Image (cartoon, rainbow, N blue to C red; front, side, top):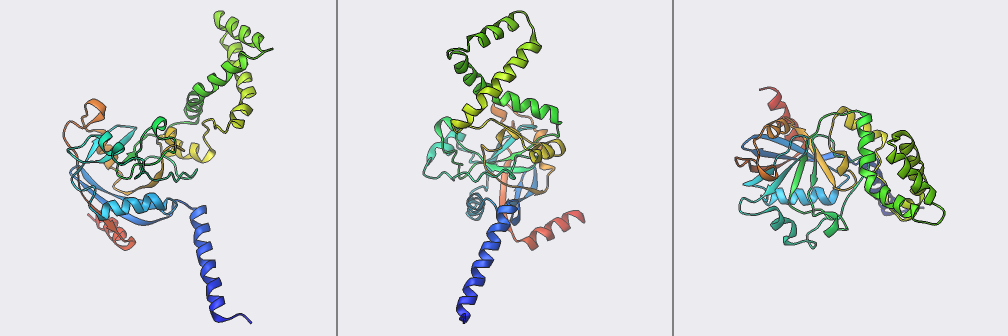
Length: 296
């Protein structure tokens, strides 16, 4: 006979397992909300359950009023809008101050992408940050316009050019492959672009297994990404590189406002844009806020 406590314990683990599976299958589930007030307008962020480290770090920052009186210090149409820099600081002061001790491990997921309205944590570049740790303060909003599949496929190819070129160069220098190099040179000199492209594609297919064997990945967009970016827009080149941990769930027009801001060097707004305050909302408070806004 099973004892009552054994049954309760089993039920507890089933609930935990069910919750974990739910988050795994739906990492974009939102239970936490943050209202951000700025002198250019207000918006509400929904934080993903699938990125608990980034979610909790952000909530802790808001609870401690980390972002009050900080700047939206970079505004870029069809780009990213950077937020959270104190008035008397430079970006590098924040990024390098406590790095890597304060860095947040990446929480990447193929369903969490840089669509328009997404939010992510900024970070130091790969060359000095091979573990791609996120900064624990600076974050960004994604802006972007819908595109088409042809342009997205072109983007894929452009992103892969450096890595593919490097591997093809090594391949051509190997014994028995000089005739490929001679053909490429001939096609290029004769401006026979079709033959050059066909041979280059053939060589690209030849070196793909080597790239995979070296543990590297070519940039590739899934059907999900293509559907999202053709309908919503965004910045696909950041996918898999920076952690997206939420999205704007109310006040998306803030992106249009920021896109029209006059900027100078490094996309810095000519006139300071301030985060006035942040407030953590319950789901009930979020719904009430949206309802009140809609009734105005």
